[in-house]
Length: 273
Image (cartoon, rainbow, N blue to C red; front, top):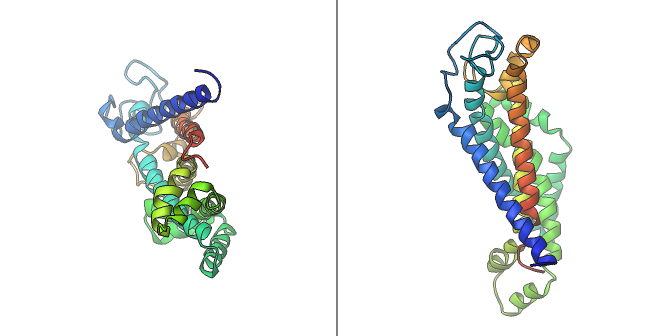
């Protein structure tokens, strides 16, 4: 198989490979405690002990096993980011369908409201919300406020372009209702875009959750958390660099894998225009 068909096959294969990698990392982040060699909240040695037989990545500021805390510490961040990404992307896609399909007064008001949200820095919104809401709720609300307007704009522009294609005109000619056309004809054409947008929202939400945790607005100690581990072990980086590098690398790897998987999945075709 050569030419465009072969390229599309490789892209789809790469997309599934990326999804598999993200799934494995996600399972490790959520259920990594099963593999943890020690209790992640109990000391196993002196603070910032270098890697050794009893603690392959050494210990942290309180003498706890770094490997065990890394295996357990991604649960809060990944689950919170996934919930925020799904919420923001769903609202953005729904709003984009409405705005792109019906270019009227309601659409203009909705777009204006989204533009106002974009004018406020995302981290500032999340920090204000974190004062009144629990950490996960603040991350979800902040991601919705900062990510939904971007998704809405991209989806709306794409829907406007798709509306003038032949198969949409044919569906309109058959007398199909707007909801049926949007569900059966438009959404499949947006499949790649939606997957890529979902990945982008996840990465933003993960960064936002990590930022709030670094500021002390995440899980309460001694619960393990990648971002909190970075803050806790800054002063001991010279004694045991792994205590700082391991959680930072975990955050970077998850963000990179999700970004690559989203890009590959976004290249797979929906319905041809």
